[in-house]
Length: 255
Image 1 (cartoon, rainbow, N blue to C red):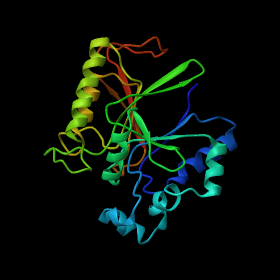
Image 2: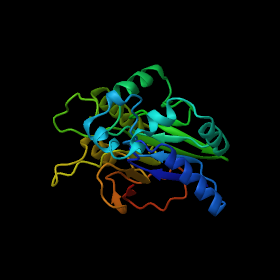
Image 3: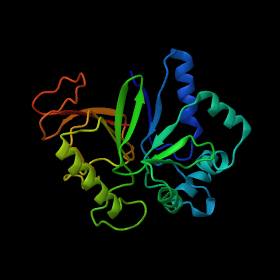
Image 4: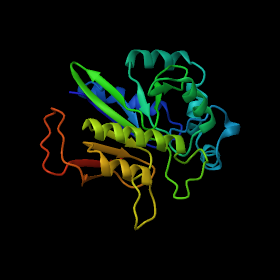
C-alpha cells in the first residue's frame, strides 16, 4: 500500500507537514511514503520579493517566513530531523510564491519535479509532467497543475502560463492515444465553475478528458470535504482493483 500525507496552503510553515507526518508515524506505527502539498507553499527566499498579502500576514506571524528562515540555509537540527524522517514533500505552485525564483529552478531541471530547498526535501512538480511514485511493486502516477486560473489568461506569475497549457494539451493527447489515465491529480485551484466564475478552465478540461481516481486541491479556503464526480470517458482500470462502471468516478477533496 502507498500512503500519502496531504496538505495545502501552508504559507511558509514548511516544517509543519514533516513534523505532522513524523507524529502520525510515531503514534500509528504506519509509514508515510510521500507528503503531497497542494500549493501556496509560501516559497519566498527573500523577504523583499514577497507579495503584499504574505508581508501583511508575516508582520503578525513569523512562521510565514519559514522558507527563508529554515529552508534556504541549513540548520543542523532541522537537517538531522529531516534525514532521520527520510520523507520528501511533492508540491505544486500556488499563487503566493516567488515565481521568478521557481521559474529559474524549473528551467535548470530536466525532471518532472525539482528540489527548491537546501535539504533537497521539498520538490515542486511541473505542470503537466507526471511524477510516478513506486514502492514494493506498486506505482502511483501523480499529475500536477500549479498556480491559479485566469479567464483573461494574463501572463502574471500567479496564473497558469501558456507553456503549461501546451504541456497539458500534449499530455492529454498522449493519454487519450494510449488509453491511459494517471491515478491522482493535485492542483492549487479548483476546476472552473460557470456559476461562481471561479476556478481554472485548464483543470476542468483535464478532468473532463482523463479519468483520475482522486483530485486534491486547496486555495479556496473551504472546509475539508469530499465529492464524488464523474468524467465523460469510459472507465479504464489499468489492471488496478478499482470497481469502475461505465463512467469513471473521481473522488475530489478540498485539502
